[in-house]
Length: 261
Length: 289
Image 1 (cartoon, rainbow over the protein chains, first blue to last red):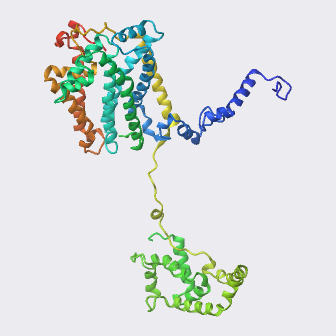
Image 2: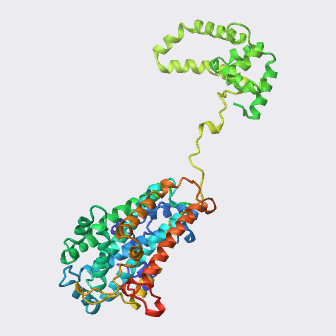
Image 3: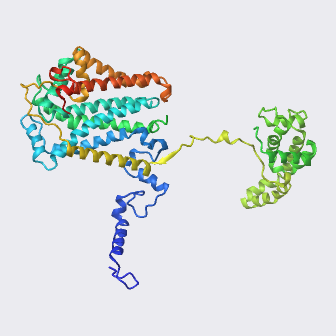
């Protein structure tokens, strides 16, 4: 441990901190975590090479190409709607996981659990509100994203199939929102779902069967709650993630976002 | 082959002048014996445009031949003469060379080294290199794609994404802190609220339910709408994405979206008890998000 720096005077605190920072960032552990191009790596400079590495060497940023068309970063073109829909999905996943710690999908406990979330759980009310508002926002943003894509003619060749995937994602978003609607098990959710499932009961030919599959019994009840809970927290998210992966992948493979007009 | 660089044309003319008529060409040709096979093609390639612009056959030898050739299948006389001389020379040295090659590479190399300087020093115009052919750059180089105006995702796009994500998170957090999500009383199957409404995004359908048979309103119309929406790219054959070129598509989509928006708004705010039409400023709003 050097207490002097060769000139005879004791190093100042700032110098010591700089030295510690330097040592940390040149340590094996640090360089193993932050790959070349990371802005946390020692000696990061703003060069085209490092700008490319930032994207290439990070699994999360890897959804992006290294470079995009200049017009593609115009906010006025995309309004960020697709990206924000995806971010809302992430936000809903995070808040949803929090809610799962305090919720049991049974007729006797569900409502009491939600009440406890509102009154007894730290940040429970805030997180529940966020989950609900973000869900409504996601339906809205996915819908607006679809409108934006249509008005830009972005569904045309070579992006036809990605549009179809997008319609599937819109449907899945509505289903995710609708299945979540039942879970608080209050009057609002019960009767909204009753209206919805009654409608689906009028499916030609298979009406009663479709309704039975959805409700898990003749009437809406504990089976329905469990069924919709599993759909909401497990099955539909699983399916939508797969379709989202294809959707994003196709955006890149079809030559980035469309335009300019 | 049309674009022969000017300096080559010039050199060709100089050389022709220096050589005089083609018959004299054999002198230089014989001296540059090592290059014998290449000579005609080079000469031809260079001279073609000068001699016959309209020729264009690609066979450079043809253009040259017209000026120089005698009979014997179009082979210039001086080349035949040179070939004969060369063969004679090879026949003369033929006894020694295989022996040298057999003895060892070093001696062979020495022999060629001795033989080499003579032709090179007296090449045409003192040059030892020869032009094989002139190829336009476009025919062998392929430009993959036109250069596009691109920017790095980091920092240009990632910064925008971060800003939008943070703004949205801030908005959702603040909104959630201020506005409580609805939670009505415990679900009771025996107590139907009046009106009973679906979630807002299905209120358009519920509105249709007022007008059509449930099978039409609840299943057929949304099913057909989603189906048509899904196959839109395969119906719309118009390749343009400019709004002015696709007025029909824009009008149809706007009407479609407006229809749902109006239905949802009516279902949300203008439907009261018994799902009957009311004005929200008279009877209040029967709507929970």
